[in-house]
Amino acid sequence: MLNTVLTGDPTAKPPLLIAHGLFGSARNWNVIAKRMSDERQVISVDMRNHGESPQTATHSYADLASDLAEVIHAHGGQADVMGHSMGGKAAMMLALTQPALVNRLIVADIAPVTYGHSQTHLIDAMRKVDLAMVSTRRDADAQLAGFVDEVGIRAFLLQSLDVRGQRWRLNHAVLEAYMDQITGWPEDAAGQFNGPVFMLSGAESDYVLPAHRDQIKAFFPKARFAKIPGAGHWLHADKPREFEGALRAFLNA
Figure: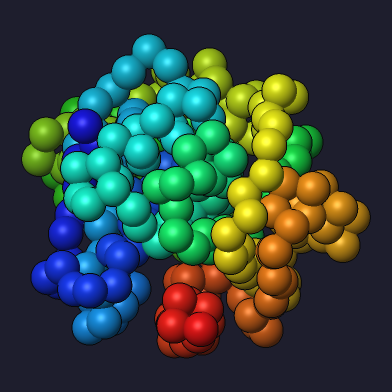
């Protein structure tokens, strides 16, 4: 089963399951999890091939949805599910294939569509870091800066570096091999989830566009849409208080 981090105690409300995005981990969501745990238990997971979860030979959205289902079965059989980016697609696939497990669905800045970009350049950059020459995270950042200009992206990637163990907590080979599937959306995806769905995106992000709405509504007829001003793709990090407020309003509606 996936590595899980439980924040707060079980309550009468369904737990909130958080599925992170590509190259992320449960720890990226510690602040949101702690704040949301005042009303419900929060279950943050490391997705497969990330963090301390198993490194596997496959990384399809059917796989990721099955992983999330296993976690929900282990924690009561139903949850509110929130996924960001890759985790959002996994959460959508879960809702479409095993809807009884999902009470409410929150999808953070992603749509059930195929995107044209790839993140393999970031895998290449991480591979170029000479871990034998790294004794502090600052050492790794100095090397990574030669390949990744953005300070925020470097900081995000370095959260998955085990400095003492001199290893990345990411299965670079499998993530690279499945990149087209990660940035894509399964052609055979079918069905509908008729429960409440909240499509929450960053106003400065281009991941969820008006052109995507018909596709979203075809899968999720009750989908509601909102944007957080001043936030980009990493909306929970850009505007954590606003993100938290939007989650609470939807979950407690």
